[in-house]
Image (cartoon, rainbow, N blue to C red):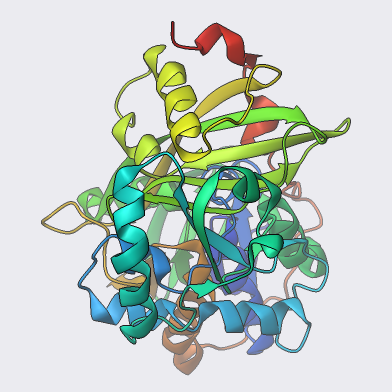
Length: 406
């Protein structure tokens, strides 16, 4: 079987890999991408879609100024792509909300104290490019009008992840291949990669953007897989009819921390799904106990006191954040791009909002040595990678009443 020959091969078809491929193609580099499951597969389909501008870092008292500086310009950057003014264009992606909300629940005495101190501190601290701003109550989302003590808007857009993956992949479908990597080795001035079905690729440079899959790629390349760390999460899901479950995108703040982060997706058959993360997802990361659903109920009632969950359904799914390892096992600072072997780069964006920065860093390393391969790109006999299914389409749903605490 004739090997596909390219200058640069990207491994991993999430937002980081797809954005990197588009950046390389825009730079005139002959490149293709291989995904071993579905595009957006594990990590990118699990994100909540918020293009953070640093607000969550500031709320968590993160003192990493460099990370905040890296991410603070991302909301405006993504808007440029969403408007089609920068490549890659995200004009076909769906914006779920132009902004994100911080709210303090009406039932919490601690939130009442924070209403006097926390938000003014953030607004005037000079940390954020998108600081929280007061809005009239009439502009608040309906659930917050009914259940919040205070609400503040941040200009951090929320994009529907499936549509972002589709927009990145659509124009380059012929370059998106499906395959399971079996072996790789460095020969002369190129990488030779073998796949489980017997197909082969020869590439001058390899870029691993495969999330958790980077560990296996590192091992196959003779590198230490411990360069990567995993931070598990257990995400909650709430599903209901559009009339019963209003759209909501934002963070519930109690004790200066994001107790819940909720974003909404309109699903099939007139239903809406809330993805629920935040401290809840971190607290239950290492267990699959049924008690999670009772805690999910309690936390939603604390964040939105009085919201009727009786007609809803609940589900969960395990998520993971793959990142460059550090000694504290904490979230790394900004994007992580490392040339671990000759012409082999391993990269993690840390936050999906920073995929544009990751792609630019990778291209900066690739472009100086890039050249056209001896054989023109030809992958007609390769299967193409398709979209993965989002987690709410694969979840096992249950009546919310079954989880209601006694």
